[in-house]
Image 1 (cartoon, rainbow, N blue to C red):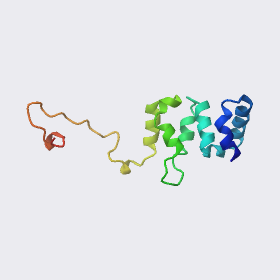
Image 2 (cartoon, helix red, strand yellow; image 1 turned 180 degrees about the horizontal axis):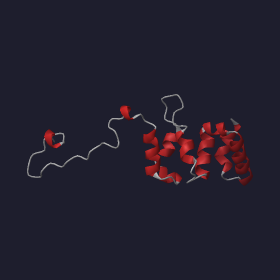
Image 3 (tube, helix red, strand yellow; image 1 turned 90 degrees about the vertical axis):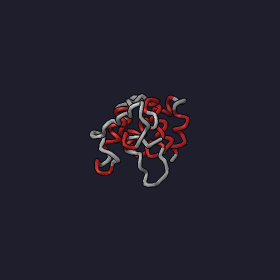
Image 4 (cartoon, rainbow, N blue to C red; image 1 turned 45 degrees about the vertical axis):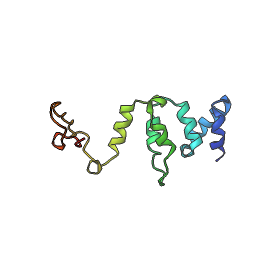
Length: 126
């Protein structure tokens, strides 16, 4: 638990940052601590393993929103490609549990401009 608190200042102390990096390499479970995960994400921007590390920590067994989900909310802030993150996340869902299968979704057709909007045109009638 000590690393969780030290991670908050590790980016300002080069020696501490190196020691924390070694500790994480030796004990990857340290990334389960929010402070360590935040430090790791800030020091490993654009790292190809960062997406995997964050996605593996999305579900902590509670209904609370995890730090990993907050960090993945805008992947560009972490130097990650949003399309790649989105594709990876979609791959985790079973197709029968999706609202619509991603590959079979058809774009909606616009209603003619001279007719009132109706449900038959694919709009809600407003």
